[in-house]
Length: 197
Image (cartoon, rainbow, N blue to C red; front, side):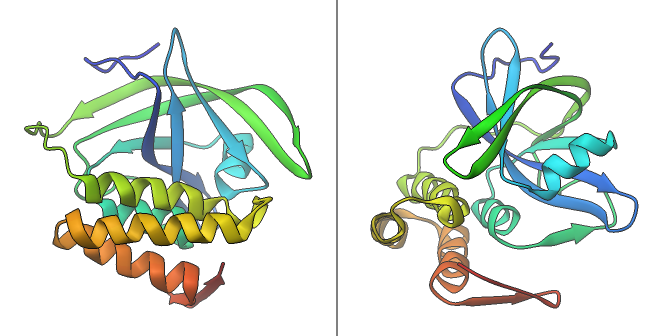
């Protein structure tokens, strides 16, 4: 059931926090598939999937902050609280595994998503920004580099998307672009964690 006062159609990218008793709240990116029921797919042995199986609390956050999307998708981030600063809305969710399989060597698992509590924090006037859209696309592609069958083509595509960000994005989008360049084409050192794509 979708308790939000709007429909989720297509695939909507959200930031998810899931609880781990040892590490606190893990922050990641998750794509919600709209329709008669909301579903999501996890790829590989991620912390989100692990925490879903543990049955702890989980929250999805709707935001337009491109930097937060990049950070959630490409960095290892843990925090003490479940909520993301700057979210326009959040929902506490209940998940159930509904299917699983393999795509090549990569395991995937599908989940039903039920929103059991929600809050709308702020509304905005929609503004179409090609730079923002390019950041989201580049982030999703970058998050799948480790399971990509054509890494060189994906890296070239990310580079082209980042050119759009430079031309069309706002200051926050350019900060996100710089972070992608650091993480994907270099080495990330954040909170003691190193991650290279």
